[in-house]
Length: 68
Image 1 (cartoon, rainbow, N blue to C red):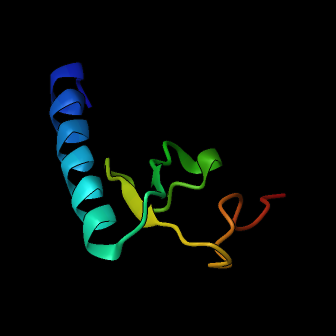
Image 2 (image 1 turned 45 degrees about the horizontal axis):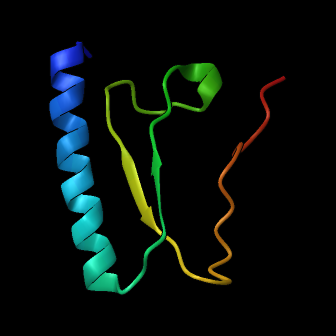
């Protein structure tokens, strides 16, 4: 993704994240972008995950599985 498109994409992600936080009544959010197979990217195009977070939500961010 070129720099100009990345800048525009992150501005949209920020707007969506802020709307999610307001609608879901939380100040906590993860913004995740995996880039490359060894970084656990499973769909090979640019995309971002916005995950609202809550106390004791049980969500663990990290490796899904280990490649051998």
